[in-house]
Image 1 (cartoon, one colour):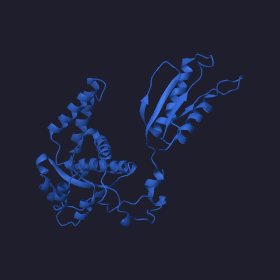
Image 2 (image 1 turned 60 degrees about the vertical axis):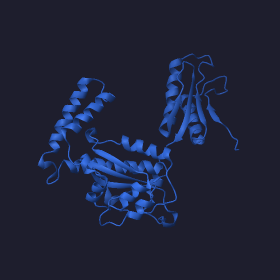
Image 3 (image 1 turned 90 degrees about the horizontal axis):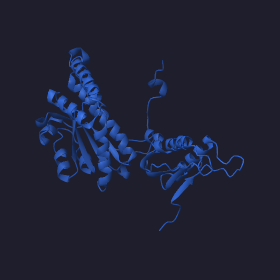
Image 4 (image 1 turned 90 degrees about the vertical axis):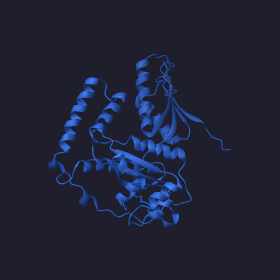
Length: 315
């Protein structure tokens, strides 16, 4: 069994009789240093000592508590905050969620997954909750997702790709997700979105909800005009929402230590028929394979991208 500290406490008593309370910035920086040192492994508490030092100014204490929270909440999910009139605040880290952009920017997408490894159910469910939460324009939510977690489900997909030879990649994945998009946008779907928003209290009052519904209807009607996308149509716009969900979920998967491989090498008509997707008013748009990289087939050389001056125009 490993032994070590269970927590770190940060207080603002200075030990100096002439100035018993540390300055605001110094006190907050001490808590920030403790948070950085803890790295999510132990409990971090921040304390303000106004009352102990005979300075009963509750407003000052609350101001400092909020500053302590700001030093920790962007780096963590809040598991527990004990609200009390006492000048003590308990902050418990549940999971470190710092985004390592340098790691993401140097990362190769894995084209080959290790068939011997399976994503834990808790991790999968966390990723699916994220996928469910991804935003769409006007909150239209034109998607349905088929999560293939069984060998039978993955085999059905692998055997119905049309002329594409990507079956092995699918079978080696821990899970495969078929991201589908609506083929049209019937009034019944729009009404379902509005009803769910009302039930969830998305807007603070009925007047704002009705105003938003009217604005969204006008926008959707505008999208239906031929000049909006030339020879393309509403389906083109809805597919953009699907790819936004794909990209965001790939980033979330990387943060969870899971590889997410996008795959367009399939015949949508074949997949639609195999899973009876068209009967639901949707069609297969893109696949996402989940798992862990095969270490024997992992790229290790640097990524190659255009230089910044070829990509960015500043005005």
